[in-house]
Structure formats: structure tokens, C-alpha cells
Length: 149
Picture 1 (cartoon, rainbow, N blue to C red):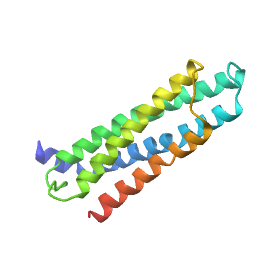
Picture 2 (picture 1 turned 180 degrees about the vertical axis):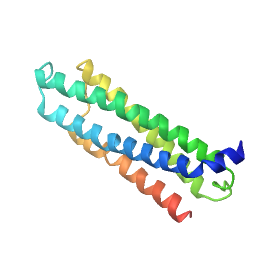
Picture 3 (picture 1 turned 90 degrees about the horizontal axis):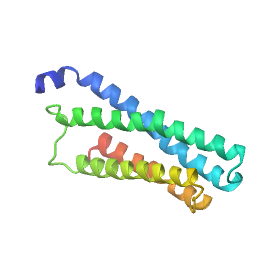
């Protein structure tokens, strides 16, 4: 299995990066939609339904598949011989950051359900602050992987 994974390593890495970019795009955009949904849209209006549709499609058709693909290709990279040295710090900081990013993804999914049930209680300001989480995690992940501290 190790030889097979080593042989497809460039493809695995490329597909992992593509998946991460797609996932991050959604993680940046969905909270911004929530900000505008919260601050500018009346509950039950036609615009409310439009925002709910956009949020649902972004989460279901872009973010969820991208998250799954990120995990699949990331785990394939982890199991590729010679790629990860678990005696260093960087794989642990990356792993912890990916777990927090996955938690954030699911948090967004729960907030979307709040909009569907007209029960959103999170302010636009809170969504703006939460929107910084993926940026901070991205910085930690990129520095971890590139600098390998």
C-alpha cells in the first residue's frame, strides 16, 4: 500500500490542495452570508428564502464535499510513507487546526438550521468575529506545513 501511495503522491497532494481551496472559500463566504442575512433580511421574506437557498446550496454542494475530499486526501497524505514525521511539532499543530476547522464547519451548519427555523439569535457582529477563525487556522496550517517548525 505504501508503494501505491508514494506513486500517486503528486496527485494526492494536488487533489488535497484543490479540496482545501474549495473548502476554505465556503468557510470564508458562508459567515459573510450570515452577516448580511442577519442584518439586512426580514424573517419570512422572499429575500430570506433566497438567502436560505444560497446558504443551503453552498453548504451542501460545495462545502460538505470539499471538506470530505480534504479529509480523504489529507489522510492519504498522512499514510504516504516519508511524508509526515510525527516526532515534529508541525503535524500536530496542523491536525489540531484541521479539527477546529471541522468544528467550525459544523457550527456553521447548525447556524444555517437556525435561519431555517427562524431561530437565529447570533448577531451580525458575532458572525463577523467568527469569520476570522478560518483565516487564523489557515495561517497556522500553512506555516506549520511550509515552515515545519
